[in-house]
Amino acid sequence: MNRTSSDRRTRRFRQPNGFTLMELLIVMAIITVLMLLAIPNGMKLYKHVQELSAKKSLQTIQQAQSMYAGDYPNIGFACNILYLGGDPAAGPPSATSAQMIPQELANGVKSGYKFTIGQCTKATGSERVTSYTVTAVPETVGRSGDFGFCLDQYGTIKSDPAGGTNCTQLVQ
Image (cartoon, rainbow, N blue to C red):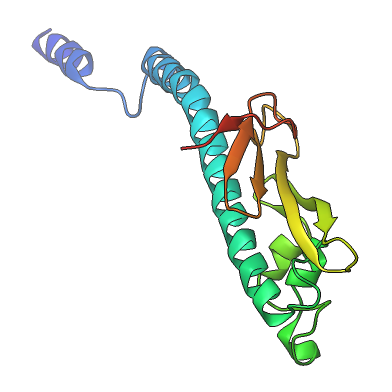
């Protein structure tokens, strides 16, 4: 009888190996709550990074436009974003392949934004382009960015809160 009671005692104090189902469910619930808190903040951060990249790309295009106008004074500013790009392996820079911006940006799409150069104005009686507007709009408004951005030949960046090209608000 003494032996039987000691067997029961050792069985009762033994710990099972691994986790119980209840412990696993609690850990999964905690992970789910943390994910639900992190995902919206992650999307806001993602859009903010995309928008910041778009503004920096506009500044890059504006600098390239200044260099382009200096290198090709008879043409003035480039009215096609492809003209600011180009492959250095294809030969020396030219008016249609100036090699001043990365090819990704010259293709018109970078970091979830589409870039175009438009509203080009030529000098009276000349083919020289004296003004332009660069626009950057999100590929998917609300997903890759919330704001559209515009830049003119003076380097002024404005935004459109609706994500389009109706830029009225000055960007600080």
